[in-house]
Image (cartoon, rainbow, N blue to C red; front, side, top):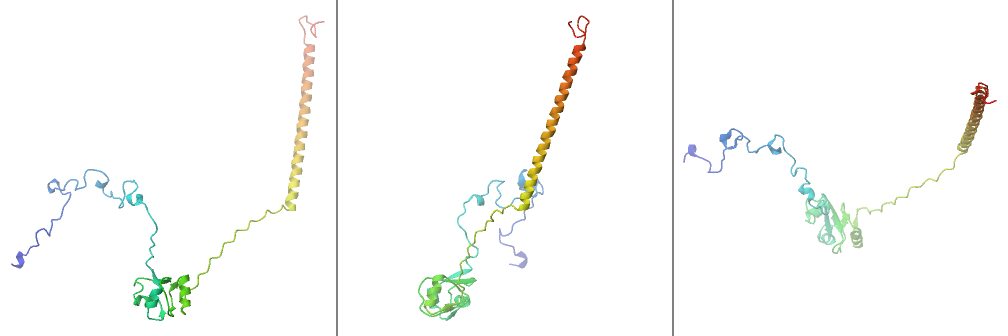
Amino acid sequence: MELNTLKPAPGSKHVRKRVARGIGSGTGKTGGRGHKGQRARSGGFHKVGFEGGQMPLQRRLPKRGFNSLTREDTAEVLLSDLERVKAEKIDLAVLKEAGVVPGPAKRAKVIVSGKLTRKVTLVGVAVSKGARAAIEAAGGSTDAPIPQPKPKREPKAVLAPQPQTEAKSGKGEAGAEKRASDAKETSETEGGRGAKDKRQGKDKSEGKDKREANRPGPEGKKGGKA
C-alpha cells in the first residue's frame, strides 16, 4: 500500500448533487421542486408548523397545568436533612457541600418533614411556618423574615351629593323669570297679531260687500233688483 493509492472507504463519500443543471443531470429543469405552487417559488417558506392557515397541531392539542421555568431554582430541605448535617451554622453552600441540595440550586427552603433534635442556625435559607416552630423548639434560630399579612384594601369612599349653592339657585330663579317674561311677550305678540289679522279680515269683508252693492244688476241698476 502506497500513499498515492489510499482511497476513502466505499460509500463514505458522495458526489455533490448539482440541481437545475439540465435534464440530463437527473435533477434538472425544476430541480426537485416540482411544478408550481408555493414550495416551488423562491421565498415560498413558512414558519415551522404552519399548515396553510389551518389551526396548527401545536395549538390544537390541549394544554394542562403550568410548568414554572424557575421550579428547579429553589430546593426543598427536610428537617431530617438538617439533622444529618454536621455543621451547626448552615447556609446554602453548606447544604450543597453536604449533598442535600443540587449544585444548580439558587435558593433553599426548609419544610416540615422528619424530626430535628439538635440546635442549628440557618443563614440565608427560607423556612416554612411549621419548620420555624420546629427549629426554635429545638433551640435553633433562623434569619428568615417572618411573612407579614397583606393589608386589606379599604373601599373607596363615595362622595355625597353636594347641595346647590345660593349662587346657582339665584341663577336658576333668574333663568325661570326670564323664561316666564319671554313666554308672556310671545303670547302678547301672538295676541296682537291675531287682533290685527281679525281687523284686516273685517275690513276686507266690508269692502267686498260694498263692491257687490255697487255692481250693476241684469236690469242695469245698482244693487240688482229694485
